[in-house]
Each structure stands twice: as C-alpha cells, then as structure tokens.
Amino acid sequence: MKGKTLDLFLYPESIAIFGSMFEGWFFGPGVIIKDLKEFGYKGSIYPVHPSAESIYGLKVYRDVGEIEGEVDLAIIVTSYRYATDILKSCGKKGIKAAVVVSDGFGEAGPEGRKRQEKLLGVARAFGMRIIGPNTLGILNNGKGFTTVPYEKGYEYGKNGPLSIVTQTGMYGPQAIAFDEYSFGVSKIIDLGNMCDVDEIDCLEYLEDDPDTRVISLYMEHTKRPQKFLDVARRISMKKPILCLKGGTSPEASAAMASHTGSMAGDDRLYEGLFKQSGIIRVEEYMDLLDLAKVFIYQPLPKGNRIGVITFSGAIGIHCVDAANAVGLELGKLSEVSTQKLLDVNPLLNGHPIDLGPVSAAAGTELFTFYKESFDVFTEDENIDCIYLNAYVSKLLQPESYRGLFKRMSENRAKPTVLWAYGASVPFI
View (cartoon, helix red, strand yellow):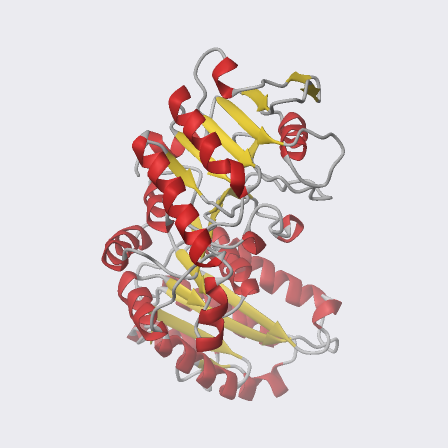
C-alpha cells in the first residue's frame, strides 16, 4: 500500500463521520469533531446521522448521499448492527477509505467473524480499504488529524520523528502517555482487528515517510509472514523497527482471540522472523519508549562492534554478554588506541576498559580517564557504538559528572548509551 491509498487515512481533505451526535460526551463522533477543531484540522467535516440537526456548529447530514462533492474518508462510530450498511452507502458515494471504530466483529466469536467477512466483502466490492474494525484509528500530528472517539483529558504531544503501528488501543493515540514522549510522535495507526489494512501496509508507507525516522510496532500476529519478513528486512536497514509481541504463552494466545480476533502462531517462528528481518524485539511496553529515545537522539551505528567503558568489571562482563546476545561483538582496539590508553594509565590495558581499579587513587582525575577513553573510542575505526556506565557519588564534584555526561551527549560521531547508577544519581 505505498503511496496514495494510505494517504486517504492520514491526510484526508474531507471526512464523513457516522454515529450519535452529542456534544460534551466522553465517547463518540462529538469527541472527534471537537478535537479536530481544536487540532486545527483544515479539511471538510461532514457529520452524518438520520435525525440530528447540528453539532459544534456543523450541519448534520441525514445521509452520506446528501453531501456534495467528494469525501476521502469515512469514520464509522456506530453499533456493528449498522456498520456494514453504512459502509455500503459510503461505497456508493465513492468513498475509498474507512476507519471502522465499531466492535462486535472478529473479536466476538464465530458470529462476529461472519460479520467481519461481510464487512470486508462490501469494502472489496466497492474498492474500499478499511482500518479496523474494533479500532481507535488514526492520529497524524503533522496534519492535525485524529479519529479517536474517546475524550482524552490531555493534549496531544508535539509532532516528532517516531511513528507507531499497533494492534491494540493501549498503545494507540487515546492511551499513549504523550508527556513521556518529549521527542514527539508523528503518526499512530491502530489497526484493531486488521481485517484489511495490516502492519505490512503501514510499514511500507512509513518506509518512505519523511517525517518518520523510527517505527514502534505492537503486534499480536501477522497474516503474511513471508511478506512481513521481506518488507521489514528492507526497512530496518534504513529505519529502526522496535516490536513488542503479545501472545507468547498459550494462555495469552487464547486471550488474543477475544481481544482482536488474532490467532497466534508458535512464538519461536516470530522470534525467527524478527531476527532475520532486523527487527528489534523488546520485552515490555516501556522498552518501546526507551529504545526509541536512543535511535532518535543518536546516529545509527555503521557496524556491530561495540566499545565498553565500565566502572565495574562485573557490569562490563554482563554488557558483553548482552551485546553478544543481540549480534554485537566487542571491538578489537587498534594498536594506536591501545597505546593511547596505556599512556593515560598503565592499568587501562584491556577491553572492556575497566576504570574501577584506578578509581580509588584517581579522585577527580577519574573523569579525565573517562574522557580520554571515550575519545579513543570515538576515533577508533574498529568501534561502531559505545556503552558506558558510571557510579555517581556525592563525594566527587557534581559538576564533573555533568561535564562528562554533557560531553558525551553532544558527541554525534557514534551512538553512545550511558548508564549512571548509584544512590546519588538524582544529585546530578
């Protein structure tokens, strides 16, 4: 789905919204319309309801056929009982894209799956594409566009380089903690039951999206594993893809069927897909935020060779183990780098560079050792990325820590990750 089709969802110039037209409610078309107005959406908004007259100053149309001109996107926020007929009327109007918020479809057992097949059949008969059903739909910060029907109670965050594709509303535009995403979010696409538009369509679209540098993905299953592998492998070479996969246990897999109607496969197969495609699999929700920060604020590494500077030999060992587990290897320092380190201190004679043994006698000179080691890594062509940890103590000058960390944060030559630990971390 490269190009214009997904544009109808993310950049619609006109929308028709179906459902109960009430102002001041916590859920429904009224919430969408109010938010669009506050968001500064510039397109045309056409509320549709058989008996309502107006909402937030907009005329309500009795039928979509009464709307003059073209409509890019339909947003259906009704009972499942009406959704299919509404979709059919949209097809007759010539609308080519629909967000179906309505639930009661594939996640609702055998009868729900039949309803979903009928819904999809109508869409295909008219050449329409569907996001959903059972979805919150779309947020596009750059466009000032949202289809979220829930009253949020907070402002959307700023536009930024992260885009999110999700099969759950809990990582969707209604629930995401925008205040924690200080770097900004560009687009969020909640796929819901994913009866039509799927994660592959979204990944292909975001591949060429100039506003997206990092992609976060919550998925429960894929319907097209080979295509998923091919597409993700291509994209992950240019844009990092982080993935949280639900349904890894038998009990969770069973729960997925009533969540989005998903049927999970063997998790070992998904693990293989992720490793072959270059997707970075994360273990918990907050990892999607924390790792996104790394890729947004740091350059991508040119290779897989890591440099490790540690205050603790044990932590350095664990770091190497963790690096090896994800395909990184400890870089072999050049002879020039090795000699530079020995010139700084004769005890700096290995890799990982362990500053613990020299710290007792070093005092504030420890910060010089950190800086010199860091500079060696940034200059050595055998090092592609850098990990550093530091024990923070009030006994040393806090401005020295601040200066050290600032120096590292300003370096953009190689991606650098810092872990500062100790009881005095808040002190700096």
